[in-house]
Image (cartoon, rainbow, N blue to C red; front, side, top):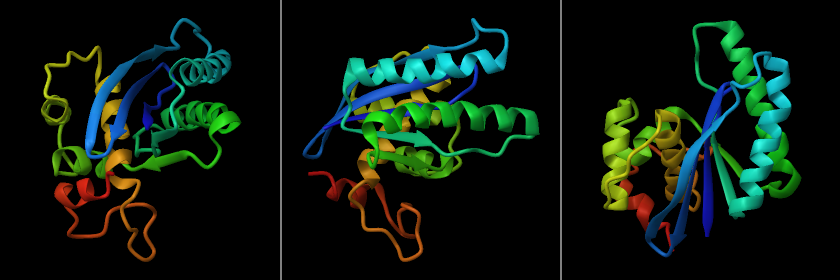
Length: 182
């Protein structure tokens, strides 16, 4: 199964694709979608929508994982991120309704590194260990998107705690999460 991870943004967004076969997770592709050619934010929304459609058409993922909204200091930045994310989700719903999942930044980091407050360098090192290869990322958006895809692969079949929103229950580990693959 091919999983697409998306790290949303209003000027650029990361995407990462992995393939899950049994307990094996393989790197397929990753990159950064840039929207800053349009100086006006409102004009970027159509570009954002279209770019997600193109990624879906090119890679044909079975499921998609996207990072949930994060806390930002600026209300304006949060509003733009929410609108950009909305344009992405709207594009995803055309072909992947019921196959789009969202994860919090802390769950993503915890799933990949074992620590919910891990820094960007720790996430990149964990990705290189998971894929057993030296990957060079163009930006944190790209590595974050791969981490989002891996988070989904590890959590998609995990039993949910009562009242949970898809998060692993307290005391869960990467080893337990891997049991759910395959």
